[in-house]
Image 1 (cartoon, rainbow, N blue to C red):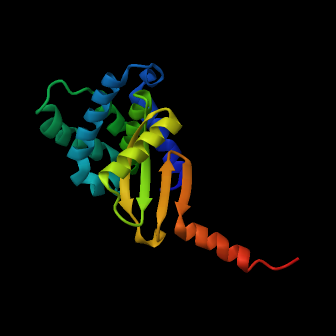
Image 2 (image 1 turned 120 degrees about the vertical axis):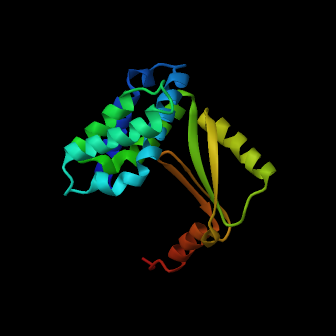
Length: 191
Protein backbone atom coordinates (compact mmCIF):
# COMPACT_ATOMS: atom_id res chain seq x y z
CA UNK A 1 0.00 0.00 0.00
CA UNK A 2 1.38 3.39 -0.92
CA UNK A 3 1.78 6.31 1.45
CA UNK A 4 -1.22 8.22 0.08
CA UNK A 5 -3.54 5.27 0.65
CA UNK A 6 -2.14 4.80 4.18
CA UNK A 7 -2.79 8.47 4.97
CA UNK A 8 -6.31 8.25 3.55
CA UNK A 9 -6.98 5.11 5.59
CA UNK A 10 -5.84 6.91 8.74
CA UNK A 11 -8.13 9.87 7.99
CA UNK A 12 -11.12 7.60 7.34
CA UNK A 13 -10.39 5.71 10.57
CA UNK A 14 -10.26 8.95 12.58
CA UNK A 15 -13.52 10.16 11.04
CA UNK A 16 -15.18 6.79 11.63
CA UNK A 17 -14.08 6.61 15.26
CA UNK A 18 -15.28 10.14 15.89
CA UNK A 19 -14.09 12.82 18.30
CA UNK A 20 -13.95 10.31 21.17
CA UNK A 21 -10.43 9.31 20.10
CA UNK A 22 -9.17 12.41 21.89
CA UNK A 23 -10.99 11.55 25.15
CA UNK A 24 -9.18 9.38 27.67
CA UNK A 25 -11.27 6.46 28.92
CA UNK A 26 -13.47 6.22 25.82
CA UNK A 27 -11.89 2.89 24.86
CA UNK A 28 -15.03 0.80 25.42
CA UNK A 29 -17.22 2.74 22.98
CA UNK A 30 -14.38 2.76 20.47
CA UNK A 31 -13.91 -1.00 20.88
CA UNK A 32 -17.60 -1.41 20.06
CA UNK A 33 -17.22 0.66 16.91
CA UNK A 34 -14.16 -1.32 15.91
CA UNK A 35 -15.93 -4.65 16.48
CA UNK A 36 -18.84 -3.45 14.36
CA UNK A 37 -16.51 -2.35 11.56
CA UNK A 38 -14.75 -5.72 11.66
CA UNK A 39 -18.14 -7.48 11.36
CA UNK A 40 -18.92 -5.40 8.30
CA UNK A 41 -15.53 -6.10 6.76
CA UNK A 42 -15.93 -9.83 7.37
CA UNK A 43 -19.41 -9.85 5.83
CA UNK A 44 -18.20 -8.01 2.72
CA UNK A 45 -14.94 -9.93 2.28
CA UNK A 46 -16.47 -12.27 -0.31
CA UNK A 47 -17.66 -9.33 -2.41
CA UNK A 48 -14.35 -7.46 -2.51
CA UNK A 49 -13.80 -8.15 -6.21
CA UNK A 50 -17.21 -6.74 -7.13
CA UNK A 51 -16.82 -3.74 -4.80
CA UNK A 52 -13.51 -2.76 -6.41
CA UNK A 53 -14.49 -3.50 -10.02
CA UNK A 54 -14.71 -0.26 -12.04
CA UNK A 55 -17.25 -1.79 -14.46
CA UNK A 56 -19.94 -2.23 -11.78
CA UNK A 57 -21.87 1.03 -11.16
CA UNK A 58 -21.58 2.34 -7.61
CA UNK A 59 -25.37 2.22 -7.14
CA UNK A 60 -25.34 -1.55 -7.68
CA UNK A 61 -22.37 -1.92 -5.33
CA UNK A 62 -24.16 0.03 -2.60
CA UNK A 63 -27.32 -2.04 -3.07
CA UNK A 64 -25.31 -5.27 -2.89
CA UNK A 65 -23.43 -4.07 0.20
CA UNK A 66 -26.71 -3.16 1.93
CA UNK A 67 -28.20 -6.53 1.01
CA UNK A 68 -25.19 -8.47 2.34
CA UNK A 69 -24.90 -6.41 5.51
CA UNK A 70 -28.59 -6.50 6.35
CA UNK A 71 -28.61 -10.28 5.92
CA UNK A 72 -25.31 -11.14 7.62
CA UNK A 73 -24.77 -8.40 10.18
CA UNK A 74 -27.82 -6.30 10.93
CA UNK A 75 -30.17 -9.28 10.86
CA UNK A 76 -27.96 -11.14 13.34
CA UNK A 77 -27.43 -8.16 15.68
CA UNK A 78 -30.04 -5.43 15.99
CA UNK A 79 -27.64 -3.30 18.05
CA UNK A 80 -25.34 -2.75 15.07
CA UNK A 81 -24.75 0.90 14.27
CA UNK A 82 -25.46 2.49 10.90
CA UNK A 83 -22.11 4.31 11.06
CA UNK A 84 -20.17 1.47 9.36
CA UNK A 85 -22.81 1.20 6.65
CA UNK A 86 -22.41 4.90 5.91
CA UNK A 87 -18.64 4.41 5.76
CA UNK A 88 -19.07 1.53 3.31
CA UNK A 89 -21.29 3.68 1.08
CA UNK A 90 -18.78 6.54 1.23
CA UNK A 91 -15.91 4.21 0.28
CA UNK A 92 -17.89 2.70 -2.60
CA UNK A 93 -18.98 6.08 -3.98
CA UNK A 94 -15.45 7.49 -3.62
CA UNK A 95 -13.93 4.41 -5.32
CA UNK A 96 -11.87 3.74 -2.20
CA UNK A 97 -13.33 0.44 -1.03
CA UNK A 98 -9.89 -1.13 -1.44
CA UNK A 99 -8.86 0.85 1.68
CA UNK A 100 -11.25 -1.03 3.97
CA UNK A 101 -8.64 -3.42 5.43
CA UNK A 102 -6.24 -0.55 6.06
CA UNK A 103 -9.02 1.50 7.69
CA UNK A 104 -9.75 -1.37 10.07
CA UNK A 105 -6.04 -1.65 10.93
CA UNK A 106 -5.75 2.11 11.50
CA UNK A 107 -8.89 1.97 13.66
CA UNK A 108 -7.24 -0.72 15.78
CA UNK A 109 -4.22 1.55 16.26
CA UNK A 110 -6.49 4.42 17.35
CA UNK A 111 -8.36 2.23 19.85
CA UNK A 112 -5.12 0.90 21.27
CA UNK A 113 -3.67 4.40 21.58
CA UNK A 114 -6.81 5.57 23.38
CA UNK A 115 -6.39 2.68 25.81
CA UNK A 116 -2.69 3.45 26.39
CA UNK A 117 -1.48 0.54 24.29
CA UNK A 118 0.98 0.26 21.42
CA UNK A 119 1.90 -2.64 19.12
CA UNK A 120 5.42 -3.94 18.79
CA UNK A 121 6.61 -6.37 16.14
CA UNK A 122 9.62 -8.32 17.33
CA UNK A 123 11.62 -10.40 14.86
CA UNK A 124 14.14 -12.95 16.06
CA UNK A 125 16.28 -15.54 14.30
CA UNK A 126 14.88 -18.28 16.57
CA UNK A 127 11.66 -18.57 18.60
CA UNK A 128 11.87 -16.80 21.97
CA UNK A 129 10.80 -18.52 25.16
CA UNK A 130 7.86 -17.19 27.18
CA UNK A 131 10.08 -15.92 30.00
CA UNK A 132 12.36 -14.00 27.57
CA UNK A 133 9.34 -12.57 25.76
CA UNK A 134 7.80 -11.52 29.09
CA UNK A 135 11.05 -9.76 30.11
CA UNK A 136 11.21 -8.03 26.73
CA UNK A 137 7.58 -6.90 27.05
CA UNK A 138 8.26 -5.54 30.56
CA UNK A 139 11.26 -3.59 29.28
CA UNK A 140 9.32 -2.23 26.27
CA UNK A 141 6.47 -1.23 28.62
CA UNK A 142 8.97 0.66 30.76
CA UNK A 143 10.66 2.38 27.81
CA UNK A 144 7.45 3.44 26.04
CA UNK A 145 5.39 4.15 29.14
CA UNK A 146 2.54 2.21 27.54
CA UNK A 147 1.14 -1.30 27.56
CA UNK A 148 2.98 -2.94 24.67
CA UNK A 149 1.23 -5.66 22.66
CA UNK A 150 4.06 -7.82 21.36
CA UNK A 151 3.76 -9.90 18.19
CA UNK A 152 6.61 -12.30 17.55
CA UNK A 153 8.00 -13.30 14.15
CA UNK A 154 10.80 -15.72 13.42
CA UNK A 155 13.16 -14.43 10.71
CA UNK A 156 16.15 -16.76 10.26
CA UNK A 157 17.95 -14.22 8.01
CA UNK A 158 18.69 -12.10 11.10
CA UNK A 159 21.27 -14.72 12.17
CA UNK A 160 20.92 -13.55 15.79
CA UNK A 161 19.62 -10.65 17.86
CA UNK A 162 16.35 -8.77 17.43
CA UNK A 163 14.59 -6.41 15.08
CA UNK A 164 11.92 -4.38 16.93
CA UNK A 165 9.31 -2.10 15.35
CA UNK A 166 7.03 0.07 17.48
CA UNK A 167 4.92 2.47 15.45
CA UNK A 168 7.35 4.42 13.25
CA UNK A 169 10.38 3.53 15.38
CA UNK A 170 12.59 0.63 14.25
CA UNK A 171 15.40 -0.79 16.35
CA UNK A 172 17.71 -3.15 14.48
CA UNK A 173 19.71 -5.12 17.04
CA UNK A 174 20.39 -8.06 14.74
CA UNK A 175 23.69 -9.76 14.07
CA UNK A 176 22.99 -9.38 10.35
CA UNK A 177 23.02 -5.56 10.58
CA UNK A 178 26.09 -5.55 12.84
CA UNK A 179 27.97 -7.74 10.33
CA UNK A 180 26.81 -5.46 7.50
CA UNK A 181 28.14 -2.41 9.37
CA UNK A 182 31.42 -4.18 10.03
CA UNK A 183 31.71 -5.06 6.33
CA UNK A 184 31.19 -1.39 5.38
CA UNK A 185 33.91 -0.33 7.83
CA UNK A 186 36.36 -2.95 6.58
CA UNK A 187 35.90 -2.07 2.92
CA UNK A 188 35.68 1.67 3.40
CA UNK A 189 38.26 3.40 1.21
CA UNK A 190 41.18 4.92 3.12
CA UNK A 191 41.35 8.66 2.89
